[in-house]
Each structure stands twice: as structure tokens, then as C-alpha cells.
Image 1 (cartoon, rainbow over the protein chains, first blue to last red):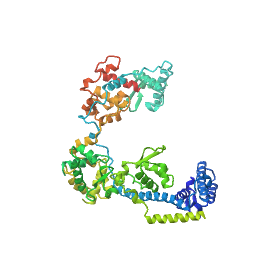
Image 2: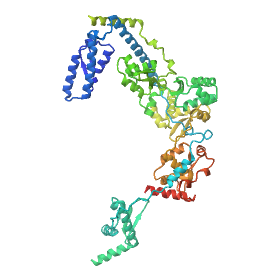
Image 3: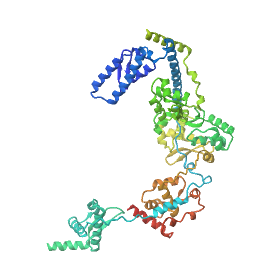
Image 4: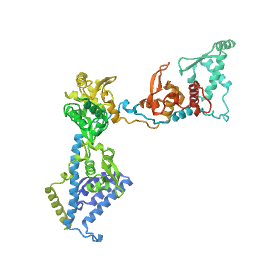
Length: 253
Length: 189
Length: 189
């Protein structure tokens, strides 16, 4: 909790601490009548309840209470050491009065502005973009704003092909033989299967070698595949030769 | 409606900000006097209570606004939040800026007797005041904006009443003085 | 004018988008039949040639628009030629349209290697490119406009700088598209 929100219940004032500050500074409550000790006690009680010490809030409270103490001490004690001629009660009142009158002027003006605002905010204004025809330069009024060179440069950049990445340090570790073996095993165990379902989590190189193995098997009539739509699932199934191979295998068994 | 009146209405409809008579005259290729007559005619057609749209003379120009009769329906349709009213601190700070501009925050705080940091920050955020440079002592000074005039229905700052009109009456002043003197005597005793 | 007619007019005035009868009915807390009658009355008041603002019934509902009679004046008042520097995405998309026109948005995206929707939309809105029909596959194709040539100081498309000037190898015009597409694919891979 911020010190400003500290709830006070004093003889001359009840409410949050920051409101007390405000009314004291506006001289609506005389600081002479405010018991600062009670405020400190209230704050200590609050700290005890809260259980832990919020350093920021505590600092804020110290600064506020210190400035109140200073104000109050000035109010109660004559201050000859400042060397300024002491204001008589009448002069002090004059100075204070001038300040209060000035404040009242703007408090009344504020009331007037608040009335204007209450009336004005009932009107709603239109917030809409201009129609497109007004948002672009008109042909007659248009003059050169860009260089054609910019277009040529943009096109030139698009024509650039980046150099092939240097892959000499990567040694392929995917064996075509091994992929062929896996595919043959899958076809004999499952009959047909979805390519992505089985190989989607493999890296690109493995997928590519697997596809290459599939091509090889297709060429030999061991496998065929179907893709009903672009980018759709690829269904792999045994080829005609595979059927005979399997049946011959069955016969061998 | 004459063609000029129609064009003026269309321009006010399209323009997001209030438009001055001079700007309208240039756009319409007409004299300011002709534009003024067209504006008067338009104001008659759109007089309060006639239509859903009214002509407002604000912020040094002319603009169209939806009549308050549509206030609630507009909020339902556009789901724009209701403009929050001004707090006392904001209204006081705004009044000080409006009358004393350019004015610094310490000056606002001196007159109000309390720090006015958050009120000034909120008024700036709401676009009602803006920074307009620095004082001799390096403090940022503030002035009101065109949006302030638009939202408060002022055609210009000169439409604000004289500040002296808001001074307390001589009787109030006498009474204040009496109260202060009495308090001073108590303190002295 | 009835109060409902006034509110309907105010709502159409405020809304930047067309508003349907149903939306108006909800906002006005009235029945759709009542709103329809109000719209009919309003249409009579704002009939073409009467006023600076006209009521239009478009897809999605009803909207107010400035009468075309004010177009030239509106341009003089509001139209600031908007020619901010082109972003890289805009320059590339514009170059592709300029050199390959007519060209479709998917093609632009393939050459650039990234979706170019917002760049194409901005170029269209600024009037630098426009739709010029559909490709064999049904995609909208774009070409540059007369405004484009004027803003780039070109008296015709044949004044575009040779692409080969920006590329070391001499270029066959017909191969340009193929080379751009190939380069785009290689960049994307």
C-alpha cells in the first residue's frame, strides 16, 4: 500500500493521507490542529498488520511526514534566524489571502470548463478515412517523386541467385540400402501406409533418400503410390511385382 | 441548396478536422463572403433539432457532428467508450493552462497548492494540453490544443470568459480575510 | 424529421463502414421495419442533387458518401499527394509488376519468396498499380498505371531501365520471368 492511501481517523480529519495533505496545503484544515503523532502511530499499526516492510512506501511516508513536521514547526515557532522581517498576522493573512483568491479564480474557471465539457462531449465526431480517390495523388497534379533506377535495382536484386551453400563438410549418413530395407519391411507388414505418417519426423535428407528409394522400388515394380491432390497425403502401396514376391515368399514358407 | 452549399457540406463531411472559412474558400474557388453565406444557410438547414447532424463552429473552423440525440445509439453502434468526465484536479489544471498558457507544471502546482503531476500527465494523454517549449528556468511549459477547443465547443480561446469573472465576490473575499485573521490570532496567542 | 430518422442519419454519418438495417435496429433499439421506414424517409431527404451528402445502399448496408459534385474541391482541400519512400517489399513488388506485367500476386510472391499481400495492397491503394483482369488460372493480374509513369518520370514503359544493367549477364527479355521465378525458388529453398 502506498503511504498516500493510509486511512486516517483523527480528531480533525478522517480519510486517506493524501487527501489530508491536500486539505492542509489548501489551508482547509489547520496543520496546527493535526496530531502528527497520531498519523505516525496509525502508520506503524498498519506496518504491523501488513507484516512486511515495503521500502518504497515507507520512504514515501517518511518524506511526507517529514515535510508536514517542517511545515508545522514553522507554523508554531517563530523563525528569527532566517533574517527576514517577521510578517505580522495581518500581512501573513494578506499573502495567504492573495494565494487563496488566485486559487478560487481557477477553481471557478474549472467548474465552467467542466460544464462546457459535459455539454461538448455529447456531440460525437466522425472518424473515417478519406475515400481512396482522395488518398492518392491526382494524375494531373502528380510530379516525379521516385527514380526509375530504384525499380531496376530492385529487379537486379531479385535476379541474384545466392551461392550454393557449401555442404562439403557434411557427410551423408543415410544409406539407400537401409531405406530400401525399411520400405520393404513396412510394405510387407502393413500392406500400404501414408508417407507423412511414417516419415514426417525424419530430417530432409532422410526423407529425400527415402523418396529416392521409393522411386527405385517403383521402377522395379515393388511399390506404387497415389496422391489425390496437390500437397495431399501420399499413399504408398505394394506394386505388382511385390505381390508376386510376397506370394512366392508365402509359397516358400 | 445551391451547389456551393452542397460542396461545403460535402467538404465538412469528409474533413476529419474543423475547416476554416479561408480554407473552404480556396477549395471551393469562391470568396470568403460566399462561403460564409453558404455556411449560414447550411447552419439553418442543420439547426438544432432538425436533423441528426449539426454544424459546429469549433477550434477556429467549422465541422459536422452527430446531434446529442444519437449519443447513446452511437455508443452502442461504434462501441466507443464514453469520454470520462474531468476530475476536479484535471479541470483545475486545465483551467490554469487555458488562462495562463504557456504555463509550467510548478506554476500549476503553486496555484493549486498540490503537486499536479498526474493531472497534467492525464490531460496530455487525453490530448487536451501539449508541451509548447520550456520556460526561462528550463521547466516544460504547456498550452491547450485544438482538440481542447473542439471538445469544449469553443470556436477559439477568445471565447473563454474573462478570468476575472471567476474571482470570488467582494463579500466572499471579506469573509475569507476575516477567517484568516482569526486563525492567525489563534496561532499567535 | 422524426427522432428515429435523426438518429439513423447520425449513425450513418458517424460510421466509416456501411451499416446494415439489423445493426441500426439494435443500436436504435427499434424494429427493423421502423428503421427501414426511417431509411426511406432519409433517402428522400438526401436524394441525389439535394444535398452535399448522399445515402448509398451498398453490399453490407447503408452508408453516407460525399456527393461527387465536391470531388475537385475535396481534392484541393484534403488530397495531399502521398508519395512516401517505397519500402523494400513495395519496391520489389512494383519492379516485378513493372517489368513483367500483367503479373499475378502468387507470381510476385514466388519471385520474392515471401507473401507480398500487404505491399500489393499498398501499391494498389496509392494508385501505382491496378487490377487488369484475371490469369488463365483465375488469379487477379496487375499492371502499372499512368500515375506510376508520372511519379517515376517515365513517358512510357519502354523507358524502364534495362534489367541487364543491374545484372552481369546479358538478358533475353522473354527469359526474364523464368530467371526471376527460378531465382525466387532457389532463395526460398
